[in-house]
Length: 231
Image (cartoon, rainbow, N blue to C red; front, side, top):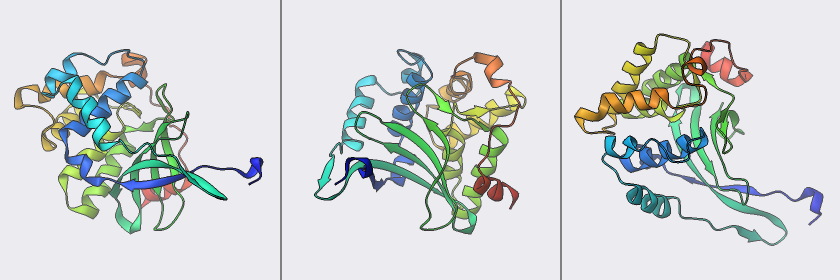
């Protein structure tokens, strides 16, 4: 194969079941905390979620353990991509995708505008935080669409939490923290007494602190996503 035409393709492994597991959310939050610049995520996270670092390490090895880089002769090789889909009206869906590309791993939040179409990347986590950010109003619109299509409040709650901290809130902090707490309780991510504190931890994580959260300028929004927001 010509070196210039050589590409590596994702081998999709759909795992919507992970969105219902507390261990998955602990694993995800630890990943994004480190991407936001924390050497060791807030130590209270483990206590708040009643999980241990060892439990999350074992979970990652068990559920994200397919590291096989498959050579396929003259065809492009493939790498594992764990994909967590959330359905939207009109045949659309959004997905959180863990691309285990050799030496270039990343997490992508994508919109599929229609069945069997190429994804549109809405935000990406490339090891140093998310870019670009979405507005909180966009994220809540996604969550409403997920609940409308699925009828499942747990999936709607998952849609709210997946993109933290890739969000420009631009609204009153207490209103956002209240929605985050509702999502934490819906997914049973913490014992009852820890739900409020976990919601605050999620709200506060991210570079720049309150000034970062207070930004209100609109991020660049891909046209297919604008079409979804307009429906």
